[in-house]
Length: 116
Image 1 (cartoon, helix red, strand yellow):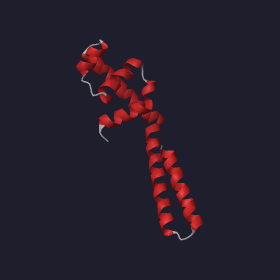
Image 2: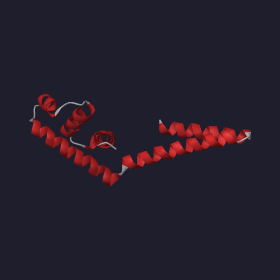
Image 3: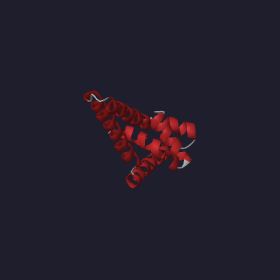
Image 4: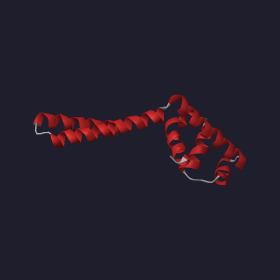
C-alpha cells in the first residue's frame, strides 16, 4: 500500500489520539494536500517545524497500529464479510430449496449491513 494512503487510513483510525497540532498538520498535509510551506503559513510555525510534526505523527500512527492493530483487524473483518456475502450468493444460486434461499438472502443482507 502506498505510504500516503496508509498514513491517511491510519489517521482515520488513530487521529484523535494525536496532539491537536499534530492532528492538524497531518490532516492538512495528507487530506488537504497542502505543502509544508502552506501549512507553515497557515499555522504560524516554521516549515521545518511542520515537517518535524508530520514525521513524529507518522511514527506515532504506525506505532499505534503496531501495538493495537485496529486497521489490520478492520481489513480482516471487511474481507470476511465480503467472503460471507459471496458464499451466501453462491448458496442462493445453487439451491432449489426456498428456505435455504431465504436464509442465504438474509445472511447476505446482514453481511452488507455490517459493512455500512
